Image 1 (cartoon, rainbow, N blue to C red):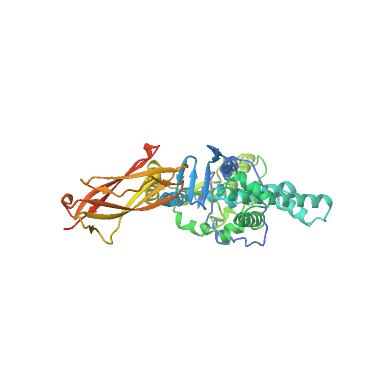
Image 2: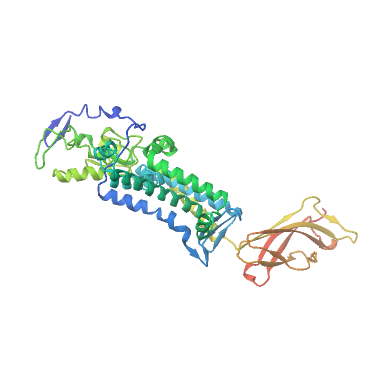
Length: 472
């Protein structure tokens, strides 16, 4: 038994319909009603992050595209920083950071990524916004429109809808391709039909995918194609806060007129507004379900009804299982092992990325000692070692490099003649021979330093420590 406003209420059957929920397998088209509210506003803010996807490629820096994944030249340009395959570990740490961040946020507040940031959710929301404005913003209106006879007005509305959908899909395809090549040149190539085969394939795939997934499949992508929807359950615990229906307060349900008070009924008036606004069409009153993307639209809807019936908000709210079912307090984040472990991994990954950017050098100089043979004794008794020198030029300009050796008395480096020229983004390997008089070889392995002097730009000079091998 539970107590509500002094009246004992039998709650033994409150959760009887929790096992009654089912998943919409596509048989019913979800037409979510759009209402304003704080979570609707948060959703708009979250969706606005994707403006970076559309506008980012057009940002210029020093006359070039500021952010460019230049796959043909195997480099990633980020403003005045150029990252090459040698720095791929930074990308790995970045991906690890976002993967763990996704898991950490899910363990704390559920699928907020799905509800506010996921590209499928965002594009679907935009597509349905267009559809509801043209065909009706409630299921009855939409059904009436679809079943009405074909008229000029109906044909114009349908044509307008699909035209806008295709425009958005095309912009999506162009925007994705623009991150991998110069954005302005890409538009020119498309309009003049001179774009590469890869560019046309990307445009076709993203246009078709966006149009089909956001326009027709919608919530079915979340149910059947998205692996994250399947993994979310293992990331929850009893302290995870999720949109939830307070059954003890809401039951038993019953209709209620404005200003009326019926102490024998719960706060839920069974208006089904929470179902009407859900983008996946679930009934949150039946418990947590696979289709819930924790967007909070049901909370806005329920709060608006509570305001109209002069009842306190929060019948549907973000709450943990422990709070709703045990009247307990959630454990602080710093005491939850899962959150602590996630946080430590996040800090390590973030620290590695920051270190990588802080230690990036405009050049990369490496020396490899050739092992076959370790050394050669020449006719005059001197000892010779062979090395492979590799200089990577990460700058945007051609550089000229002159090599020298130090650290071993009497060491002489073969003459290379003209300085070695290294083009931007290229590695130039050369074979180098170092000779040392036999009397100066005092150990089987002696430290040797190669110095790479960049002519006209001493700030790029590099030094690499290796060893000079001699007889025992």
